[in-house]
Length: 455
Ligand SMILES: *Cc1c(COP(=O)(O)O)cnc(C)c1O
Image (cartoon, rainbow, N blue to C red; front, side, top):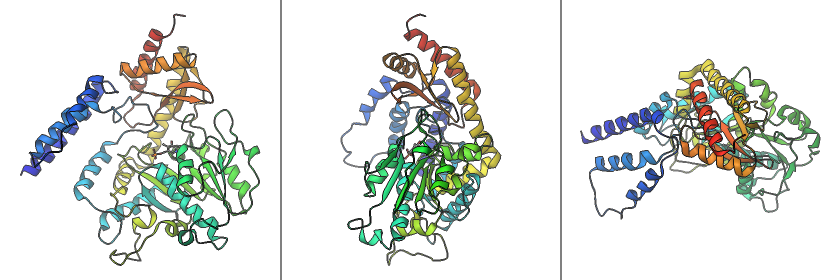
């Protein structure tokens, strides 16, 4: 009984938290942050009432959160959680399935397969792809690039999993100079080196310049980007894929949020030719709006991914005719990440996903138009869900952003784009309405006018 009461109490507290998001500031108050000191207790000597632990978590923890689950958080391209995905997450949490292997966890392993089939369809990728449901796009980049490393060396007869990189034929790695740092970090983790790369120059939107792309020979991995984290711009992926065709080069695409453009009719042109690549990384916890953490490594040749990731041991009940999730991921024990992806896709359907992506893109343009009309300088072509806006010089723009974050109606982050300091607005939440955009723009303009010298 105590367990049921505890779980009901948690659900009620969570619901109250979500209901309160609209009325509170997006950033936590300084008082809420100082309140975190209440967590700094000595390690308890013995057990106590679990209800008291939950109460403390809510009373101290909830106010010290940023309202990322709300409608007016525009930082980091991350989105919130669709209600059906949060609810499914709660249920799957109760299941507590260690979804590494099919046989002991058939329900969650099966849902992962269905989610994968639907994902490939909605992202317009080859239906036979292998996939790892991992923690996010960083690990998805790492996982897909491990498959790439395996494949380009295996072609020359080198088994990198068995023999490592010492003495292996060198691999040329080509990236755009605006590649996301998670790509270079992954290259470092894989022994390929964060900076031992050929970095191709980019244009003013951060797109790799196709005419500057080098001729490639020998084992080569090319890392392209669908959706620059500042501008939302896409590398010329189709053109580069055609360019390296027949060379044996492996093309990987980091599409943490940009891959979802394929699901929206008016944005799908941005991803033209992307299906010719060999691997793709994306997030579900960004634009698909599922809870953390959930990213996807998608690989055209499932055998390359499995060769890089599978492990076997006598005590692990593997079953050859079923897909074991852990054969495709760095982790062995893992939570059932496919559940929320399945729930999101099932509840939204193809049209619902398209509507979400289209709406957020239109909202980004709405931000850009209104901020420009009020004197803001828009620094990027708003092709997707990203808006970069400057309010004068770097120091002034920084002061405006800090004041906007402190005012609390909404939250957007700071960035430096090709030398210009800017506010970075990412519209990626299911919860954001046009009224939320208008309310946020009004607050931004009001706050900016208070900071800027009178015109
Ligand atoms: C967010 C992002 C990543 C990293 O994703 P995580 O889910 O934070 O690991 C990688 N690449 C791009 C382009 C991104 O936007």
